[in-house]
Image (cartoon, rainbow, N blue to C red; front, side, top):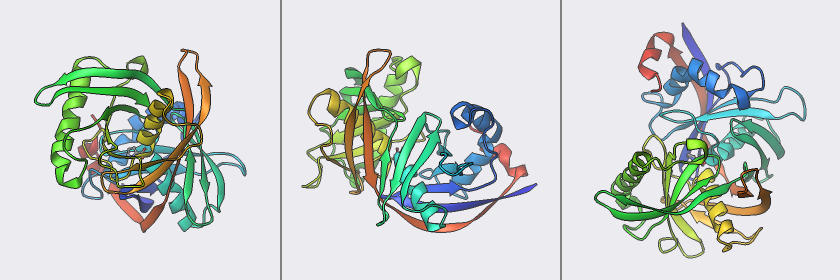
Length: 319
Ligand code: PYC
């Protein structure tokens, strides 16, 4: 059987998103919050085929979108990349709203979206800018020190911003594209060391995003520059919405950023998200959380239809 899937491509600060508008059945029961694992198990190979080569590449993030069933209800979205599912995706949410606006499916205003890890509210402004009120973010562990073979001692915070991050205040190679291979190697080694030592997020969740952060390397006017390595070994060309959210949680926990204060987060490519937070509360485990807000804009780059033959799918199974 040959499947046809309508898509919209965009990039947000250089990081691409491919929104799939049909071809994947809507999750049953409680929606994407309960249905994402089942959906991934059943349709993972098809999702993988839409973002991996030859239709895409390692850096492409996919987003399956199901519109609200009733006026005023929330839409649903499932983000994924070259190796599997993402909990949330900040640049992808900005890309999704820009894509739906391009198709005339949404107007400026606030749009609610259910994701596997919670509900986000995203505002499309008249000028195309998108403001994402992300899921609650928090720091899980502070100042975790590990010895990374070939790189020495690395200290970082474990934090949640919709995905799990290990955030390192970096003072090695400058966070510039010229060093992307060495930075990738460092992040990959950190991730392996975290796994080997059983250092995880809450409930044993794998820390699959590594974020190097440096105020030294930021362009004047920005607060920090980052290099974020994603689970499939591609680095984020944008400042990473969930990574910026996790960073805001750490800054809030350290008391160095006040509620509402703007944090200009620059990516390794030089693109910028504005971050700020509202105070949250304290959860059942006694951990203080914040409500992060990320602002950015996306460009639509293509609208089209993908063809995928079922006979190809065996080559795309997620491990
Ligand atoms: O913007 O949250 C983000 C993101 C996650 C992975 C790639 N981008």
